[in-house]
Image (cartoon, rainbow, N blue to C red; front, side, top):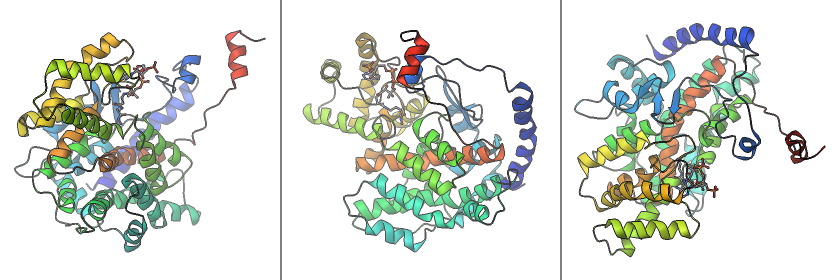
Length: 435
Ligand code: HAX
């Protein structure tokens, strides 16, 4: 059965569960909210729903109930390769089922028709001054394609029904996702490779096509598939996923929503952390004359950073309380494929050195590394050395999960988001400080 039919069946089965919860159990209390949480980025408040992924603080992410090692083992892979198709991972995110080879081939065939980006997108990208941030170009390219939206067209024609709204959203997602790889690679080639874009090859899978359009030989296809899978989703509350969901909740189409998601990734506490980490490590390597790292030298380096009031990039997490399994998956890749890479040796030794230091420092609730402590090192090894591009890679991966979430938002009729605000006066009253 084609993906859309499988999804339609799942949606029909799912809706009564949501309806029952809201109608019969709508007043059941889920959580309480404290003043600390209101000022503290709403940390830990249980106020969103998603079935695409769940982040356990001690176990890390599960995509549709599967851990990262389980996904890497169970999802279909291209012949002779170790890392699964992103097409199959998207199928899993969307349906909750591990796809067959045939299911993956269907998605691959759908995407292969849709890799090419319109000429006007190329013109827009070319019109940017070359020193424009890659993320700015990415966000603008995606929103520029809004005129293609079938969801928006359906709305304008007055045909957007609550029960059917997911269908044009699904079509938009299938149009946009393959283009995310093309836009990313296009920006890379015009900005950093002397304006030499490479057109997509429709016969290739998502990760291989990206590697091909980047102009980087194997095993960069494996690196790309792995990177996109690992970054695809992390529940709904992180800045990028939440921004995408929030914008879509106003019934904006996927182009507005994913452009906003990209903007949400751009900050140093979120998606930009991967380049900040690599920058920091490479400065450290330079200061140590590119010698093999020693524990003592790294310890001093970390304490100097902390004592200057800065955070150790790539360490800590708002939810996780153990080493991020996305970090571990990349570490395993490096142990297998690039054990002698000097940057990896630094990354590896920091893994030994930083957690005890952060514990001693006593501030960070989670002293362990997150995904961003590792990813830049692999990209650098394969020749992607333009730090500012790294968050674009994150954007391509994250769009897989955010798109799956937004289709389901429309399928179960998620309402427009509108939490309530309070003033400082009101909180002082609630706290009993002021009468
Ligand atoms: N180094 C030093 N101090 C740290 C720290 C780190 N890596 N992580 C947290 N802290 C500090 C915080 O700055 C905070 O200090 P103050 O009380 O003085 O403000 C204190 O510890 C408590 O913070 P927390 O509750 O443990 O962490 P938060 O939930 O507030 O923030 C962050 C989580 C990921 C933003 C944080 O750990 C951080 O800044 N890490 C470094 C940047 C980074 O790696 N970001 C990527 C995260 C993964 C991601 O989303 N990628 O997209």
